[in-house]
Length: 386
Image 1 (cartoon, rainbow, N blue to C red):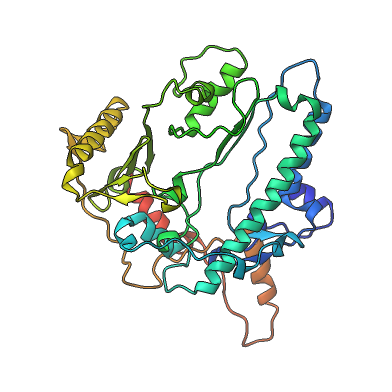
Image 2: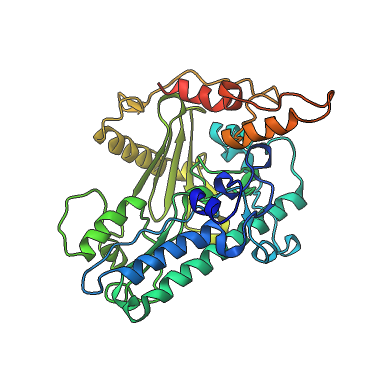
């Protein structure tokens, strides 16, 4: 993509389309025209593939859009499609601070979002995020339109690798098991096997995509996961879904089913049980960890997660039927400036420094952060998991 854009006359092409580091969550104007934006480029390549394919053979197309990943930048006029005053405030329930893990705190720090909250800025961020989604949605539509009469004979799956906190619970980023981060889209269209407008409450995961695609192609497999068509038909209503981020000192684990979600954070030595049977807008539902009426459920969910981890040989997580304990991490979070990440692109950083070196004497100074100083907090967490 970068090479293509430089060939079109753009001198510099930024990673993710915008400035990172301190600007990572600040809405930015795109440096590209709509037709040159990365979201358009992915659609263009996908449409080109469909135009040139052999119509007598089955095909597999994976179109992967970066957006709405930060930095939140969209081309005009998409960048102003939503106004901050139209966008609601983040979801911050009473007691929400008690639901945050070590990873929420670390993320907020290195994403430059842990030193107070400007409500208008957060609403502007959320509006910019929505604009990114709409521009991707438009370009997805271009790909589907190219299928024409073949659309009803094509299995279409829309999903994502993670969600975005966007200020919910006072947090930003991902790397947690709260709903804004882990409850991602999973939309499937194929009239042959999926009823229109059907909503399935059974939890699924990205691991179910591979067996779904193979089943659609008529290929038998013993791959982990299940065919989404069978799940939608109610053949696995009682299944649970496991999720894990990191390991050892920093392991974060989740098991969820239709009714409950259990979460454990090794870095906090703390567990949570959510009753997720309430309204969808309540996001993670009720935290019932301390409710005596749910103690049996808590123990059952914990045991089921132990069994799943032990089956996978996760000896660094479970030991003798209990969570393995580690020393709690301390990354000097009392220092407000410790761990603020610097993600300047090396090429752009070198060009910037060269231009600053050309300034009049007295203004010239080093502005580049390289090596460990640029990603200190991240490298600290990696060291703990070795």
